[in-house]
Length: 137
Image (cartoon, rainbow, N blue to C red; front, side):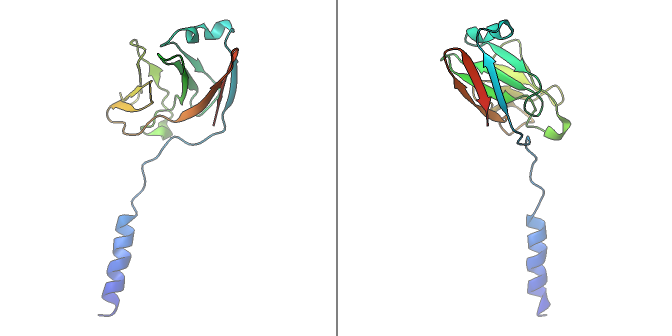
């Protein structure tokens, strides 16, 4: 009888420790692009975006917002990131879609706008000068 409360506590601890939902891994990011480079002319106008390969987990999207600021997100979907599904910007230019699950994300804040995703995209810090854009974490 003395062991029953201890056994119940142990059982509750094991039941309460379910596996946490996975998120996009943290990897070092340090990207510098020159605004005048012809490959990045899409960033000259609000709503413009570019893909940067070889950075982040599945590449990076840099997006120019309507207030002329920039945001950067990892292209790796936050829904089942172990699949390394790279999101792509939709024709509207306001959302990006995970081709594996159909999840959609807002490019203004990286938030999920269509299920099954429930977590934001991994975002990175963006600093700009007159001629360059720096993306880091």
